[in-house]
Structures are given as structure tokens and as C-alpha cells.
Image 1 (cartoon, rainbow, N blue to C red):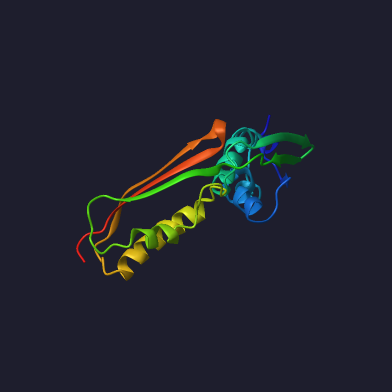
Image 2: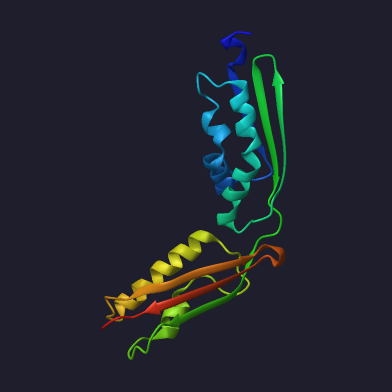
Length: 178
């Protein structure tokens, strides 16, 4: 047994079943993909990274609303080369069930309907994390535009029920002084 016997010269990672931003996000989360061009990558490390890949893929798909993908994976060694293959079926997305945007305290002058209408996610929409993040920013922008420069989100919560594929969004705003 020599040190050279445990080093791999070539790792190929194949990702099938998804395209575009979802595929790019999987690549960014997938440790084996990130390490595949390392000069020294022991076989043991390749197997370890492959073992964690399904969890990484699942996490990478969540921002797109896919919380329960079906992932089949295989790792094949052929002489000095490895092939790690992942076939991904995203499944059905989590959709928004409710959006509850309220004020923490009375705030005369706050046009709450204007603020609510600025939030991009509505009941029935796919729970797309970037829309959620951008929506929170837009709520604050609307508060600022109404003259509430000390406004802030005092509660920002999402409850995802994977079994029902539903998300409940709760946002509470403190307007501060106008």
C-alpha cells in the first residue's frame, strides 16, 4: 500500500434532471464538485464527500421551493478515475399557504395595504426564497417612503410543513416614529 494508491487523478461529477439556476445552486453546494479538481484527493475523501451529497443537493433545492427531491446517486471507480452521478427529480414544490403581515403597534399614517401589496409572495405561489428576502426589503422600502425611517421587521418567520408542501409566512412590522 502506497500513498499514491489512495490518490485520485480524475473525478467527474454528472448532475442530471435539473437545469438553470437550480443546477447552478446544486453545483455551488456540492462539496465533491468543488473538490473534484484538487490535485490530491484520497479515495476515502471522495467516498465521504459522495456520502454527504444527497443532503447537500436537498439543501441546494430548498431556496427554489423544493424540499423533498428524489435523488439517485452512484459512485463508480474505474482505474484512476471516478464518476459521481446524481439524478434529481425535484418533486412538487412547497407553496405559500398564508401571508400574515401586521403592525406590532398602532401606527397612524401607515398604509398597511400598500405595504402588504408590495410583498411578492401570495397564497398559492411557490415558496421561492429570493422573493421572500426581496419582499422583506420592499416592505421596509415602503415604510421608508411613507416617512417611517425607523421602521423595522420585528418578526420574520416562515413555517414550512413539508408533508403538506405548504409555507406560512408571518411578518410583524414596527413602524417607529414618522
